[in-house]
Image (tube, rainbow, N blue to C red; front, side, top):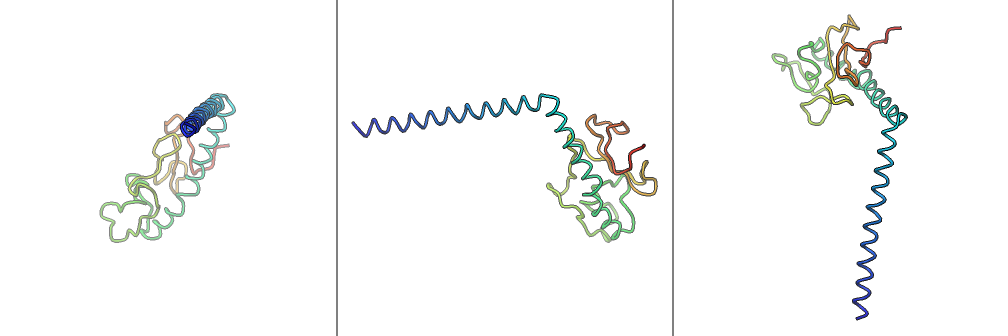
Length: 155
């Protein structure tokens, strides 16, 4: 009889701990929701996405493109795109020593924080003697003011 009352108390305590944990998770979730719903939270998130994109287009892709240029003697064409860093372009298997960029999955370029593909152009429209690589930004449309690229912003 004593054992059954001890077992009941332990099970009851576990049940209260579980309910308490769920309540705490719900409160945390609600606080996160309020934080992202307010203007400062959205602004911080947008700034983080923008900075991440700047790092990718101005730093992360540069060394792989330089290695590709060194091996191939030319940059990938606009048609070949950044995929040429992951997979050998048609008729160029002999010189290609990639992959030049390690990604997962290995045959798919990373996407920007707004879930769009990065755009690569060679020769570039902004960098006439080189390449342009950019994100179309939050609106997902190329050629608008929110594009984030490897060129110097107009002053």
